[in-house]
Image (cartoon, rainbow, N blue to C red; front, side):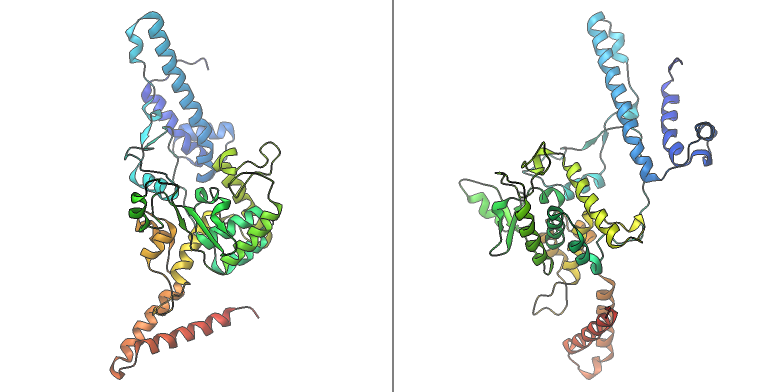
Amino acid sequence: MGASPLKEEAALKTINLYYDFLTKGAESQDYVIRKAAISLEHKPVTHASANTYLAPVNGFLRLAQARLKDTARLLRILTGNKVFDHVSSLPILEDRQRSKAEMDSIHNTTLKFGRDSDTYNNLAAGGIRGGKVSGNNLPKHFPINKIQSLLNGIEDPMHRCCAALMAAGGVRQSELWAVRLEDIDEFTRTIKIEDPNFHRNPSAEQAHKKLAYKGRTTASLVLFEPFKTTFFESLSEYLAVRPKSSSEYLFVSSTKKTYGLPLLSCQKQNTTNKLFNRTLRKAQEKLWPNHNQDQIYTSHSLRHFYGVWARNFVYIPGRPSIGLELAEIQILMGHKDIKSTAIYAKISEENLIIEIEIAERNKMYLGDFQDINEIRSAVYIELGNELKSRMKP
């Protein structure tokens, strides 16, 4: 802009001021930021919005860095002068090593095929680091008492089918768009899903190694009622209006340019997920118009819902308590690490209270030799009566 180039130290300091400029503006403790914010009449934005604004800025900085390196390389070739070997860009713009937490997050939310090296995808693009967005006190899972209303309130048949499958089967979004027609059996009401790492069916790994001709590895998806019925009802409605296509994939595009092509290949997954979340947002705003933006749940909350439902509402006859064990839910959800399962499968407040009550009553009646199962059944009956009293007439 006509000024002399900044020294590296000054450039780094100036760049790092930008995030504070966005989030604090005239309220910043830094004089330069306050002066700039007042002159530009900039009003502070939220941390979430600031992280969004950083994307194009970082894109510009990385582009400038790439052009600098290309120019230096070209001049070295044309002039033969080695002085251009020492042209460097800002360290902040160089690729950085992802943290273990970032890598774990990527592995737990991405469907992978085959075995990757330890260094695969371990670098992230450099740039100005954003701030941490403060979360709210809302649970990550979609509210239990509103889930059925949501599924019934989604107008788009395809997205209603998607939401029902995520709630009933806990699939990842990457797995959702990869569902094939051949893996769905409407007669037996079963569905299979990609399982390349044998996370959902560990016992199949040894058998698969013995096969002479190894094919696509799949595992049966465990669907919970009543959302299982909702999914197959939604599936029938979607198939009735599904664009005519020879694609083997269930979900295909209905837009003019990509009509009939699988969503998995004709558009970026990020775009597909955004359209899905937009539909969920509209449904929630229509069903609960008085809720603020912090009470709007995304599609990933449906996968969290599956974990909570499995932990607190699934009953297997013969067991003394309701809910599956974490190790069992880990297999159902396809987690590599059980720590990830613990994040999803939170125990409900009611179940925690009931188990404490059972333990306390057991100690109280210990001298009377009363059967623990008799105590447990009495407490569960009381809980059932209390839950009935909460229901609207």
